[in-house]
Length: 188
Image (cartoon, rainbow, N blue to C red; front, side, top):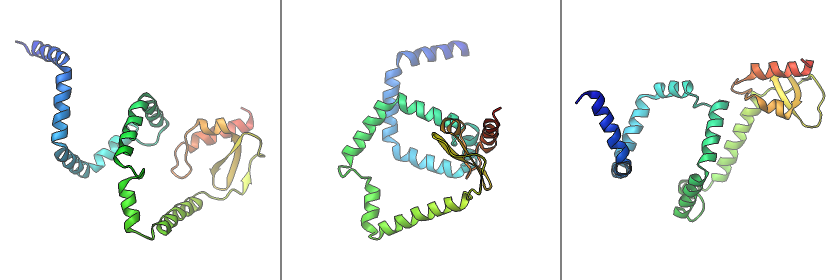
């Protein structure tokens, strides 16, 4: 038997026994769940840099393509997601995640800590986004303020402002949105 015939035979066997294979693999994963979890955690620790490069190269970061892919997946698998959520709520009848509840119970000053953390993140955001001193146009109905960088701002139509994914804090897409906003302002 040639390797090509063997490969075709294996493919045919897999097609005929697909359901049996899926059941076997599911049972094996359930039986060895702890070993798989330990192995994957170890692998992620040892390959942290490779994983970071992989995610960056294949769009696992917050790019518009990745967001659109995730949104399409969520829409396609909405029933499965709802079923999973119902099952998790059934396991946790209090309606809260068990770890969060346990943390709140063991830390009586949780509200203060939470408020402090939220206030700190908001303060860091305020510091990172500069105050606008110069507006290139006037505000109008259906407009959104766009920080062009530095102390310059421009009011754009909401649809135009949302058409290009950008973040002044992370520097994503700022060149593209600034270019489009100047063209829109000049009427080009």
